[in-house]
Length: 255
View 1: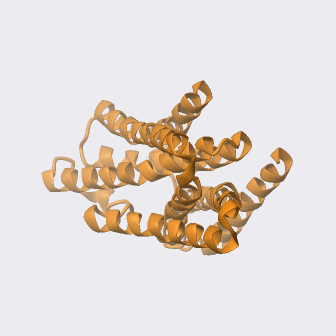
View 2: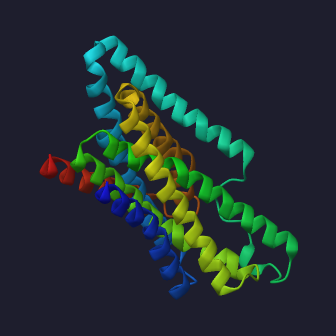
């Protein structure tokens, strides 16, 4: 349990690290941001497939091949549909357009930025659950793979939420506080995922696939389009491949 808690704090703390970097480098270029985010997308893609989806099938095999595949496929789509519903209820994750040029004291802009931060916080919950489910499965190596992938993704995410809040006139202290809260949501999600699977091993295959589906949705719907939106598609593509291959190597060595 101590390992789970420390890992949860590490995953959430990665957002805080990103926030600190965001304060230091307030004007990071789109190209650099896209490359880093694409690398994180590759890491998360490998973690989702090798750490969640493949184990989901393996754990479900006790019920037979057909049931195992059905549970995994249903879990993936359930996770994706869950985040799709979240996207309908809250604003999109992308940074509000034109924020640096907006008046610092505009209440409308502050509200828009805060909704943007809320959207990130809500997206962080299923990512935390994915990390917790990994530990609940009992495979520590795979759990660290998943948590590491999510933590790497959280660093650029923490970076990109700083500049819009500062530009909207939110004080640095409050900006850091809100950024830390988005990381705290991930800690809570990790604990939820861990205890849910620990209580009932029967839901493990579905829970693993559900967590994998949420990660695939975030990668496909949020991260890849964002990294291809500013003219850095080629670099972002190779960065994604590097991230994926790096986690593949770690998975083989740890396995």
